[in-house]
Image (cartoon, rainbow, N blue to C red; front, side, top):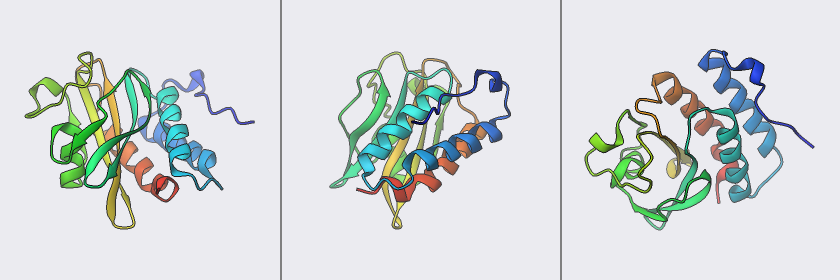
Amino acid sequence: MFDFAPDQSNADLPKAELYRQLAEAAAALTEGESDGVANMANIAALMWESLPDLNWAGFYRVVEGELVLGPFVGRPACIRIPVGKGVCGAAAATAETQLVEDVHAFPGHIACDAITKSELVVPVVCGGEICAVIDLDSPNLARFDADDAKGIELLASQISPSIQI
């Protein structure tokens, strides 16, 4: 049995180290497991346990040209999002990280959860194409910064072989 719960004594870790440890734990959790959905579920739970001030952590998968809800932890969410719509759809359409300090100021924001105030969405590339996005939501304005984006981008690049379905 593994215990990947974050060490509370490390609450003041620099973000680079926090995300390095997160990526390392995700690699350990997914090692040897070929089921992408199971791996996404464990990674979503790991992000939820490791990152403070979230109300949602998980995945949207690209299925037949749209984003479909994948494994997540948090409040109920939109099930389908057109590519190009909202923060998640923008990340999938542009293949670029979306770091949004105030989702209500984002053009075309889809309000899946009225509590969410800021969002970080990072595309995951599998075999040269966007296969999913990692979505992190927070009830706090400006919860995420460039260091968070860089850390989740690292995670996305390292887990992409483990989440292909």
